[in-house]
Length: 201
Image (cartoon, rainbow, N blue to C red; front, side, top):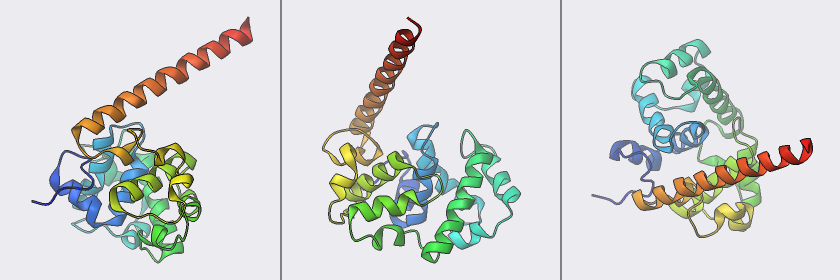
C-alpha cells in the first residue's frame, strides 16, 4: 500500500483522489472554510460520485447552477453552505475552462515563480491571499511543486511547522494544526476585544 502524500480525509480512496486528480484538490481547498478539514477535502470524492463518477471542469462549468446546488445539498450536504459553495465551484470550473482549458494542474504548472503561482491562484474564484498562500505551501510541501521563490511567496505557511493543511502528513500533525488554529483564533478574539474596549474607554 502506497503512503499517502495527502492524508487529509481519513478515507484512503478520497485521499488518493486528491493526489490523482488536480481538480479534486483545488475544489477541496476551495471548500476548506467553516467546515472541518476532513469534510472539505472529502467532498470532491462525494461530488465525483454524484456526478456519475467523473470530475471534470468542463462538465461542471456547463451544468445548470440549480442542478449543481441540488447535488451539493443532497444529504449528507457537501458543505455547511451548500448553495453558496456550489456556486463557487461552478465559478471555479468556469474560470479553469476559460483560462486553463479546463486543466486544474495548469494553474501551477504554468507558474515559473512562487509569486506567479500565488497570483494565478488569487485570480480564481474563492481564492484570496491567505488561501492562495496555503495552497502554494501545500503543493510545495506535499507534492513537490516548488517554483522558484515559492517559500517566500507562501509567507509563513512556507516555514517548517504546523500552521495549515499544507503541514498535515498524519494524525499527529493534524492535531497540531488544529491546536495552532485554536490558539490563533483565541489570540485574534482577545486582540479584537482589547481594541474595542480601548475605543470605548
